[in-house]
Length: 383
Image: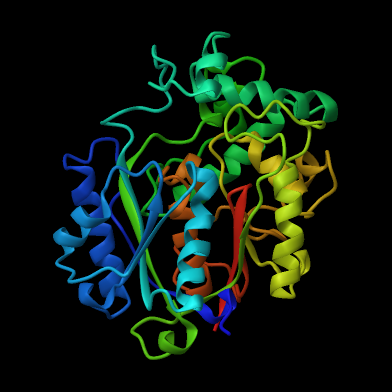
């Protein structure tokens, strides 16, 4: 029986990442999807499965018609938002491994800057009648920055992490973005002083430059079997392992109901499975692509994956380990703060490029890339 590790990403595509795309979300999805299909050397009729997010506005049948596909045999949607970015590849790979589909298109597209800005206050509590948003909205938690800062503050207090420590990550991410032509902040590095003089969003946790982009754009990938990948246009990138972890007491946004708020428990438990399934360890990872809606999550994630001990991420970063010449280059594309925010899917594209050897900031001899979305993750490697 086939396994997830018998599958590969064979095509990648994207639109530009902007603040005003000037076109519909369906058109963005179609442009990125067609680019991914063509990158693999396939045609739309070769696609028989689709995966996206529960939050994506693009109906599978609408996208199917737009691309000119004949038939879909399998569809799925990953749960929630960016925390499910790696889960979309897990779903696609599982479909291929099980025989439910032969070639699965994974897509995510939105106008999150020119359309609805998720980072802005919503007077209706995210237009939701669900208990979580409704209850927490009454306490003034009406933006993601406020919501997540309340959680991150415990970590910062316990380990003496300052906003200046957070700034050192941001400076590194922006340095990577500055040499990536696809990044919104291409050619625009910053200094630590720039970070420290940016305005407070939630004092004393987040400044403006600690917050991810609000972007318009689309990203897509094609997943098929490793055997088939060897005959296609691009070098296949193996999905060596992919998993999710959702723990008792955990919530995607209002994550205040667990015994220890100073660690990301899901990252730790997910990591145990990734190492077991892939046969790899932290020492085998050449590049780490870490989802960061806000800068503190990088610190929690580095520790959760075991790259440093709890409370030591600030020193790991300060000592230069996450730079392009460091022991663990992180977010070599500039990440969601520097390149663009497409719910973390652009980080997967960068992982594929690093294994292919085609990244703008290519890490020499990169073979294994960890792509982490804190609650979902994967390891990419060569066929």
